[in-house]
Length: 57
Image 1 (cartoon, rainbow, N blue to C red):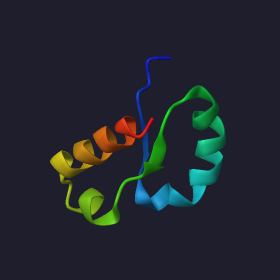
Image 2 (cartoon, rainbow, N blue to C red):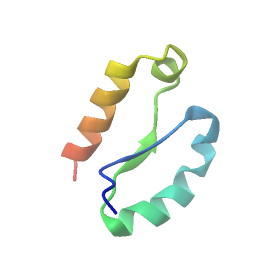
Image 3 (tube, rainbow, N blue to C red):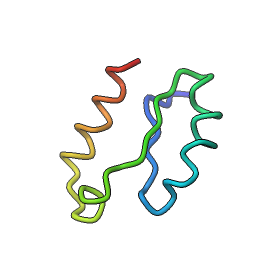
C-alpha cells in the first residue's frame, strides 16, 4: 500500500523480472536505478528517474 514506484539498486538488477511480476499487477512501476547515478549518489537524477517512471503509468 502507498507505493508509487519501486527502484532496484544496480547490484540486484538481475531480480527485475521477479520484481515486475510483483509490482506490475498492482500498477506500481519498477526499474533499476542507472548505475552511474547510483554510484555517484546523485539523488536528483534518481528522483527524476522515479518521477519519469510514475508518469508512464
